[in-house]
Length: 605
Image (cartoon, rainbow, N blue to C red):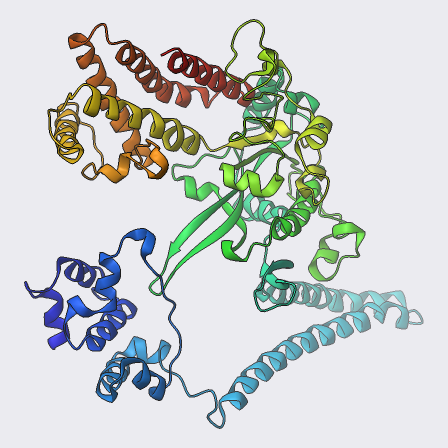
């Protein structure tokens, strides 16, 4: 009971109390806390868990739960008493006793037990196959009955066949349903991909991962779930794209009836009880299917730990399979041959040539979405927005330095890059490397114009970081808008003003107090880092502060330019939400022109 009381004691650190509340009725989390409390002999401030919480985020270490024997636990904690306490706590807890206690691997009978489980599964599979074989043999015998009755009179033959045929039909249906049940009980399709393996001499090995083929998902959505899309909206989608002369739509071989299909890749951190793991996930969606909750419109096809990705080879293996499936979706029929022309097996062979949906829908890839990290890892472009010597843009000849007509911030009549968006051939020859190209290039109708960039990363976590940091530094240091004192004191005053502004305008946010490390980074960089939504709130507050300061310093040239740029950024935030409904080439060109104007304003100052 001492452990339970320690989680609620007023003498316990607030961080531990919070962890105790989060672990309420969660056996695995309570087990972790119990081990930490026992190892520190009841003194929370000396536990590894508490010390890790107090560490800076960049120095934190995330451990992994492993199996330990009694002797290993004693050696780890340096006490048989502590080891015994932890073991007893696990034995008392019903859930923990099932998942966190097992027999020693060297114990007699453990390997035999595992082998028995495997043999039982194989035996069950053999029984299922035998049943199907017997049914098939019975069907063949019944089907040959008509030949055996050829010598009998028509009356007798008709009477026997009338009696047998219903049973024959029922037998065929039973076999069909049994085969379907067996197929559905099997695991999803799998794929072998190269992954990082530090133990291998080559540093790479092959591993098998589950994968869902897009054509199977679409069959399920439209035939089983009976998802419906208005054909008029599909026609309007293509008509609008081609009316606006979008290169990807104009060059696409898709008809007005092809349903738009999207592909999305992104990484995500998964926080488990034991560790933090980053996963790379690839999903598909139907851009014209928009349920209230976005997560209901995303269908994951592949996921893999990000740390196991081997260069772009891992994703290339996945994209090769997805391109094969998406090309089948374009035609509207199940593939008649495997990837690279290999023969099909199993259920794929049985479904070969059948329509993907009952109503004969066809699908075309119109979006490949992701943040810059995803696109960089997929395409490995030779251009870079950080470089001043290489080309800047992956989709056009814009540069950061060089010919005036190609400068990305040139929005005058002399600008030429905005009318030179690459086609597929130019994209491959001028922006991609010669080897290990992404297999998505083989998708029917692929065009570099289908690449979509994450607006949140580009705007909220890009432009706003720079703009907010520069504006706040100007107000704090140059103008002392928030009063005299150290930079920390000025930030405290600024935060109070920010809270008052949000309360006055009824703006909800989750922004914590401003700290110097949020603004001033290593190397002298000024970036006001914040969450995406909070960055928008800070932007509107800073724009208001700059306009107020402008009344007191109307001749301050930098203030005039900064307030103009910040107001422009504020309008851009709303403007971009409107631009989301416009063709992507217009969005990209508009953003680059606006960025060019802001660049010239600051360059002039």
